[in-house]
Every structure is written in C-alpha cells, then in structure tokens.
Amino acid sequence: MTLEEMEKYIVRYDDLMPCKTAFIDAHTPGSSQKDNFTIIGSGVSESLDQHVHINQTPGFNIGAAGQPPKCFNSLHYHNTAEVFFVLKGCWRFFWGLDGNAGEVILNEGDIFNIPTHVFRGFENVGREYGMIMSILGGDDSGGGVVWAPQVLDAATAHGLILSETGLLYDTKKGQKLPVGDKPMTKLSEKEMLGIPEVPVHYVVRDYVARYWDLMALSKNESCLVVGEKGLLKDKPGFEIEFISSKSLAQELYSINYFEVLMPMKGDWNLTWGGGETVLKPGDTCLLKPNFEHSLIAVDTSESSLYRITNTDDLAGPTWRGWSTKR
Image (cartoon, rainbow, N blue to C red; front, side, top):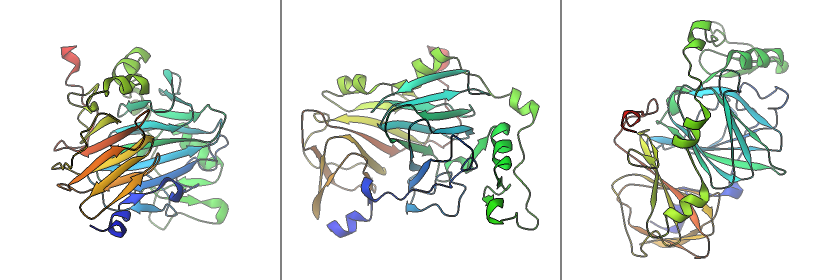
C-alpha cells in the first residue's frame, strides 16, 4: 500500500467536516451550537447534510462531537454501545429520565462506556471549545437514537420535526414531512417507566476509566479498557485498548481483525511495507485485517492512543453477565 492509498483510510483532525444540523435539538437553545462529525460510518446523524469521511464500517462506527462552553447534548439513549473519550476540554455527562439521576466530570483522556437504554446527555463545562470522540456499536450504530419525549417537544416548538424514518425536516425552511411519513412516535409513559435510573456509584465503578490510571496500567503492555476481560466489562462487538509509549514492541505486527488507531497524546509513527506516516492527536486511522505494520511513539515522555478492534460478538445491549460474579 502506498502512502497515497493509506491516506484514504486516515481522517486527519484538521480535515474533519462538521454538521451543525445533525440532530433534532439543532435549534433548541443551549444545544444549537453543536458540531457533529461522522468519521467512520454514518453514525446516528439525522441530517442529510452530514458528511461521512469513511463509509466502510468494521462492525462499529467512529464519530465525534465538538461544542463550545455551556453547550449541551439533549437526553437520548442508544440500543448499542456508545463509548466516549475526551480529546479536548472538560465535560459533564449526566443521565436519567430528567437528566438528574447522576453526573460525572471527565477530563482529557478519560473514557466512559455509557450503558445502553439509559437516557444520557453531555455538556462542555470547560472554558474553550471541547471535543469528545465516540465509538458506536454495530455497522448501523443500532439504528439511531431514541430521544426523551421532552426533547422532541422542544424541537417541535423550534421548528424541527423528526420523521419515523429518522430524518429531520426544518419547518423554518419550509420543509414538510413527505406524504405518507409520520412524526417519530414519542415513548409512552409505560415505556418510560421501564428505562433504568443507574446509581452514580455503579456508573463510576463499572463504566468510567481515568486517563492517568490507564497510563499507569499501560506502562509495560497495552491495557484492555472495554471488553469481556477489560476494566470496563462489556461485549459490544468491539474491544478498546489503551496504549502508551512503551506498551508495544517496535517490530511489525498484524491482527486478524480491523484496527482503528486514535491518538490521544503525542505523535505516533505508523510504518508498513509501502511507507510510513505520522498520526497526531485527533487523527483516526482504519487498518484492515492482517495488515502488517508497526506503531511507535515519537515522544516517549507522554504518548497515548486508543486502539479499537472488532470482535465476533454481536452489537447490542450492554453486557451484564459479569454482575453476578462481583
């Protein structure tokens, strides 16, 4: 593979193309300044304006959200995994039917495997524009998100309608639902009662990992963060490893699965038979199965990245098979 061919599978941070009308809350005050990025796969965007950088999916999707201070993402849930790590800034994640069941503050490098079927939202509580990177389970990201009823009501009041097919229509632009389409049905009261309110101590214990803990754990080998035997035990159809400068040997290697490299800190030199390139924080690189390469940190003082690989598990609800053993 030539360098030119490889660049087709690398999305550089500086080349990311945002969509400001990706979701139903695009006009809702407090949420209207969000940037949504679909890096690998189309994610869960509801807008035809969304640019997809790499269409091929390896069993999961990669995306990102960028927001200025005090901007928040409205309450919703996913049917498959949604994992975030903080690339830039300081973020508040909150959850529950009304968003007040609990909250946790995440800083750069921290990672959160949010349980499926739990309403969640997030807010940039830092002082500058922030960025969080996401991994979504399944080639179709679980078929989209489910919004809290109050979010759909607020959107309608500000001119946006979500169709039952999952596409947005802006009445302020004169758009109407196509003939035969209906607005997205809101969850019933009975359905709302079936959505769990997860206690804070479970979330912090079982679904959050902190950057500096991962740096310590990856001193001599990679640290499995999300996986059946990971720190955050789950089987979402992919595994996430944390790698720091001395985690990997410098020789060439290959694996039998897709591999996505997402640098967090420092520059990383990626070398293969046909060339080499440097991956920087915020870049995303998709490598196909059995692709022989090496990965070496340019700066050994503090370099880190997340590596995501697909597994043979099916994407679906958060796996809780471990809970009876703890």
